[in-house]
Amino acid sequence: MKKRGDRPLTKVKNPEPNVNDPSWIIWAAWADRITFEEIEKRTGKTESEVIKIMRGALKLNSFKLWRKRVSEKALKHGKKFKYSRKEITNKSLKDEFSD
Image: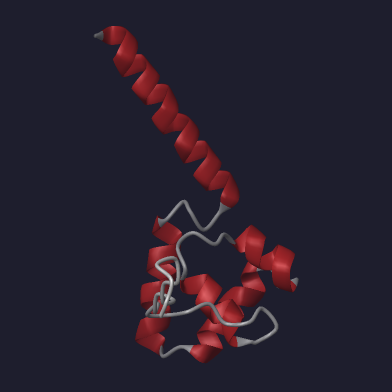
């Protein structure tokens, strides 16, 4: 008889591969919440090296979609993300005081 606390592992559509596996870089580059700075910290690959890897690993249209997606999202770049969060916080504070 199983205990109530034993729960099955949730199956994830794209589980995280091992960091030492070359496919981890591709997985991390597609993930929204993993910044280029974090990829560089874990693997030593710079943003331009990650772009080269993605260009070689993906089909042309997939690569174009990925580049468009990455360039529009502030999450992939740590500095942009911090700046955008700061703007949102300041805007909400201004709205609070104007009411």
